[in-house]
Amino acid sequence: MKILRRATLATLMILGALWSRGQQDPMYTQYIFNLQTVNPAYVGYWQTMGLTAISRHQWVGLNGHPTTQTFSFQTPLRSQHVGVGLNVVLDKVGLEKRMSVNFDYSYEVLLSDITSLRFGLKGGFTNYSHNLTQYEQYPDNQSDPLFQATIDNKFMPNFGVGLFLSSPRYFLSLSLPGIIENNYQSNVNNYSTKSEIRHLFFAGGMMFDLSENVKFKPTFMTKTVVGSPFEFDLSANFLLAEKFWVGGMYRSGDAFGAIAQWIINRKLRLGYAYDFTTTDLRNYHNGVHEVMISYEFIPASRIIISPRYF
View 1: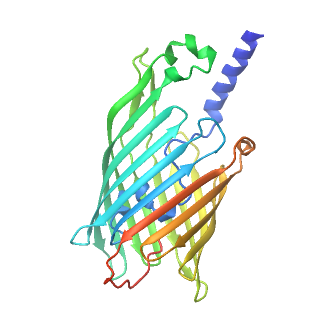
View 2 (view 1 turned 90 degrees about the vertical axis):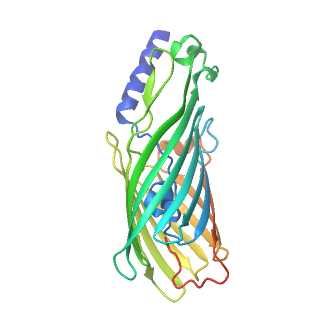
View 3 (view 1 turned 60 degrees about the horizontal axis):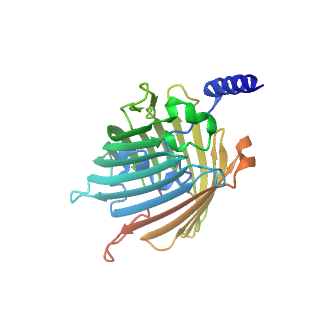
């Protein structure tokens, strides 16, 4: 019976590798309010110095559920056509930990009085660790040599590129944030896993006036990875009296989401999102929660001609 159970488990693992949908790069329900996480060309778009922090807790209640903490900083330089930024992501799934630090640069080319195209470059590193020896709660792993080591790469460089076309009423974003496909290796039998795969992101959105106090913003984002199913996010958000964003999101094959954001003043914004999982996994966790806060350093004397909607 023990041999049969192990054979069944091995078969399920093989089939799972063929059919399962895996998450590698962190995902965000409120991606539309901070595209810097995937596109370096977005930095400088605010035309002010700004900070954004996002905390995402996925599948709360499951042991070792994914958590992601993101900090982003961006600012235009004196010329206003150059933007620079910093993006730090702390991602944890079980005992697997990944910290990414990236510096972003963008250059803006004016196509008309209201339309611009930004070219972006991203460069940085990832610190990845996975202490396999801590999986001691699983007795079968104690005699497995692949669970007697720590995968630990202190410095793994990478770089990416992006384009960002925008006007006050629409935007298009195309980016490849990680070009190098790094392998993470331990010191046991040359065990390795390709843990950084190229992700191509394409996103866009428009703004419509439904009435004097209600605006409508539909957006989308697609994610393409070689060897994985094509994925897309669709969202619809309404801006009420220039103070509150409310809306929803659909992520293909994964979840629906509810989004709310409070524009406290022209400097400070607070956002919250909740995902409703559509897969069978919904029976085993207590939800997906995401909190966002952003702050812009806008001088009191500055006159804002057009509000920022993206």
